[in-house]
Image (cartoon, rainbow, N blue to C red; front, top):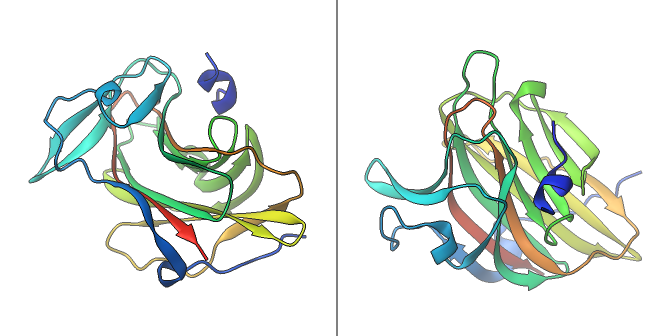
Amino acid sequence: MKSFVLMALIGAIAFSIHAGEADGVVFKNDFEKEDEGKEASKLDVLVIGEGEFKVTKDGAGKVLELAAAPLETFGLLFGPTELDNVDVQLRTFGTSTGRRFPVSAVGVNGVGGFLLRLNPAKKAIELLKGDEVKKSAPYAWTSGTWTVLRIAIKKSGAGWVIQGKAWEQGKPEPAEWISFEDSEKPTAGRATLWGIPYSTTPIRFDDLQISKIK
């Protein structure tokens, strides 16, 4: 798998984050107010790479879709610039083709920051710092379903704790997070989303949201 950072540049301390602990939503986009066919470059985001992201219909609603080709890593920067104490989540949809699987991710702290990556080929979710996998956990992904990806970074003592979780839409959100602690001060940056259409089918994203953590 190609490094997210290269393509984009053309024991752990646990903490609990629940929706009720957020100070408030600072960014949200469900694409319902956007025109069908509108390119991401005309939205309030910054496109990374040459991927074609467009608003498209999904049933009665609208979503942002990454084209099925080329087979490269593509991403977006969205929301305000933040250093820490933020919680970012989105929904992603993809389908497999034979033994080919799409890869999606959500991140914080900009390009080269922290990522929660959905990796169906490995049957896992992974927390990364840049392109280095720091933590992973088994995840049973089902082709043709929406998956919620959630990542958070919080200041904790002399360091920072990064946590992530994923679950299939319509199923209960898991209480458990995967997490790791990092002692290096992160760089402030915008939230990110990423997609690699390995299965040569489009990848869809929806319900982008950023909240501040108490």
